[in-house]
Image 1 (cartoon, rainbow, N blue to C red):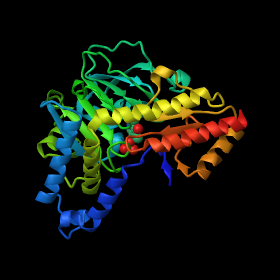
Image 2 (tube, protein in one colour):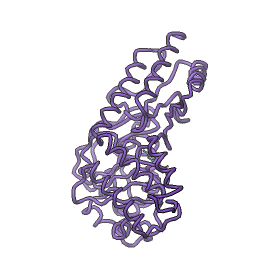
Image 3 (cartoon, protein in one colour):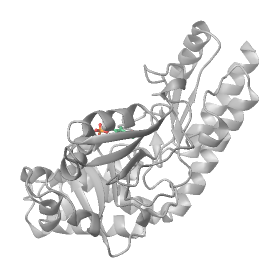
Amino acid sequence: MIHNFNAGPSILPQVVFEEASQAILNFNNTGLSILEIGHRTPLFEEVLNEAVALVKELMQLDDHKEVLFLHGGASTQFFQLPMNYLSKDKRAAYLDAGVWGTKAIKEAKRFGQVDVVASSKDKNYAYIPKDYAVPHEAVYFHYTTNNTIEGTQMHSIPNLSMPLVADMSSDILSRVMDFNRFAFIYAGAQKNIGAAGVNLVVIDKKFLDKSSSTIPSMMDYKQHVSNGSMLNTPPVFAIYVCLLTLRWLKKIGGVSAIEKINLEKSSLLYNTLEANPIFHLPVPKEDRSHMNAVFTMPNEALEKKFNAVCEEANMVGIKGHRSVGGFRVSMYNALPLSSVEALVALIKDFSNKHA
Ligand SMILES: *Cc1c(COP(=O)(O)O)cnc(C)c1O
C-alpha cells in the first residue's frame, strides 16, 4: 500500500479513480467514452450542471454567486483577475504571505497599481502577517487562504470593507467557511477537488458587473458566465473527475464532516512532531496549515536518513519544496487518517533511534 502525501496533483478518493476509469471505457452505459462525447450534448450538460449544483450546495453559496469551471489552472487567475479589474489608475491590495501570492502580485503589476499591504518574506514566509492597513480605494483585496509550499494557513477571514478575493487552491472544501463573504474565489482543481486541467471560480454577481468587457473573450468573466462555462470546449474529463470527487464529499457528510477528519489528521501529525524534538516546526502554532505540514531536521544527514525510511515504507511526496527544504506532508481531503497514523508511527520510531 502506498501512502500518497503529494502536494499536487495529489491523492483523490479510490472510488473516484474507479468511476473515472469506468467512464473512460463506457460512460453511463452509453457505449461511449467520456473522452469522445460532445460537450454540447445533454450527457455533458448534466455533468456540468450537477457539478455546479454540488459546488453551490457544499459551499452553501447564496443566490448572488456564479460558479465557473475554467481552463488554465490557478496561475491563469493570477493574471485574468487583474486583467478584468485593474488599469493604470486603479489599484488592488495584496497580502504577500507565500510563493504563490508573490506570483499573483507579479502578474497583477502588469495591469495596474498594486499595494502589497504586508509581507512575511523576512522569515521565508513561515508565518502569516497580522497587522496591516488596506487602502480604501483598493478595488479588491487578494490573499492566499493556504500557503501550500510554506505550510501556513489563514484561520479567519480578514474583516475588510473592499471586495475579498482568495486563492483557495490548496484548502478549498477542506473546512467550514463563510464562502459568501468573498467577491471572488479561485482554486486549481488538482489538490482538493479533482484532476489537473480545470479551475473552479466562484464570483459574486455584483463583482462580475464591474469586470472588463474590452478584453479577449476567453479572459472575459461575463462571457464565461453567460455561456455557462462553455465559451469553448471545456476540460470535459477534468470536470467529470471534479463531479465524482464532489459526489464523494457529499456522501461522506460534506465540508463539516471532512473538516473534522482533517483536524484529526493534522493534530495527530503536529502533536507527534512537537513531542519529538528531533523534528523542527518552522511555523508558529497559530499559523499552521491543516493541509500541508512543513518540518525540518537538525542536519542534512538525518533528513536523508528519514527520507530513505519513508521511501522504504512506501510513503511518497514528503520532500519539502526546494524553496523551504526539509519535509512537507500534504493531507488533503482524500488522504485517509490511516496514512497519517502510519507516518506518525514511523516518526516515533525514527525519533527513538536517533534522538
Ligand atoms: C498549486 C497552487 C497554485 C498553482 O496552481 P496551477 O493550477 O498549477 O496554476 C496556485 N496557488 C496555490 C495556493 C496553489 O497551491
